[in-house]
Amino acid sequence: MANVAFDAVSQVIGTDNDFTHTPVGTPTLAVVTCYRSKGAGDSEVTGITYGGQAMTLHAYLSSAGDTAHNASTGGGAMVVEVWYLEGPPSGAQTVAVTLTGTNDGRELYVCTTYTGDVDSTTPLGTSATDYDATVTNTSCSAGPVTSESGGLCFDATYTQVVEDHTPDSPQVQRYEGSDSTNHRALVSTEAGAASVTMGWSWTTSTRFVTIVTPINLAPSGPTAGGNPT
Image (cartoon, rainbow, N blue to C red; front, side):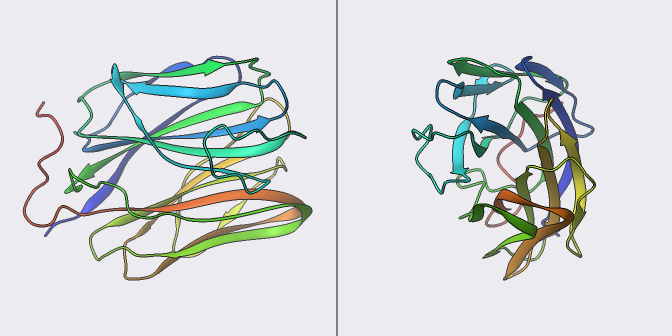
């Protein structure tokens, strides 16, 4: 039966932009989610490579509602980005993030890999997003996105409180961590279905940015992507 499965996660915090990701299995999709506080003059992500191969930007969202990549946002807005590479090389690989501007340390990069029958033509479906710049929220959600049985959805969520966050059921938490200041980066997955909405809850009121994305199954048979070991 065709399916997509979570494989492994790794991360780097602050001013070190290159790190190593080690898959458990043979990945058919690599995803890097970026979490940054973006004020005037702060750094911009201009490119990411996985094992020397260029990744593609899939989604960008700030807590001011900007969706254009590296939109001019003042006031230290929170930003989430989703980058991907279909058919990544096997084994441990270097994830390299290219930046312009000043890296102030309020940055965190998370790499997740996935195995299984990922669509080699359109690996990611249309994302759902939500954000709120007001410091009044103790939960967030985005969706629904359209997926399918055997597929998988993931979220990239960013808040401004350093405390434990709880994923909505039946999500599976894959990553929770903080940058060098007061932000919280989150990743979870949920099995694919015709309609999927994902969210988190926490205790202290804050603002948030969240992006929910479906991973598409190959139309039929095993994926054409991925490299043999």
